[in-house]
Length: 189
Image (cartoon, rainbow, N blue to C red; front, side):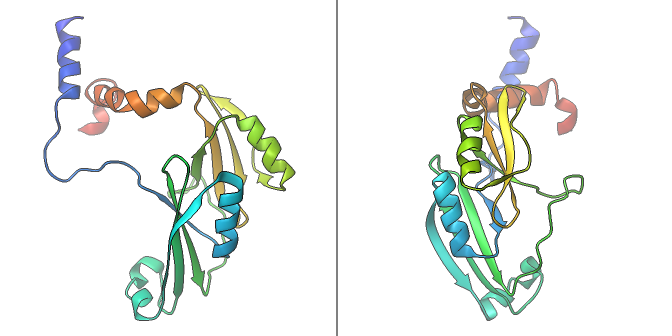
């Protein structure tokens, strides 16, 4: 290995600054029209289990008006845990706002992705259960993926990363730090 490559790798792997740091995405949140139906749906189809549930109303909910967009709400929410430790937070508001579809070319979050194996098998299984798919299964960059809608029309992606799962999970941090100093250094100025 050349001295230049060794220096780049050493810089990329050097410990970062101390103090507060982000560890990663903890959970995704989804607003639904029927909390109990959503809990059943995400459990029956993907094995998520409800771990916590709370309700905010009155003054407790009104204190979050800047977050929720108005006062006078009752907010029911809970965390559901996937088999791999991923977390989906489910919200139900009373009174609800009318649903509106995600617009992909407008800035904002658009979907949640669930890691699976055998995307085609999932499509067969969920189609038999009446789940609406938005796309046919696709294969891009070594991964199979497909989009569906939950009962409220929220977009859910099923993705099988195949061998890339191990690379992203175990080597992704190293590769990202190397790219931060090389290929994509301009993003981090």
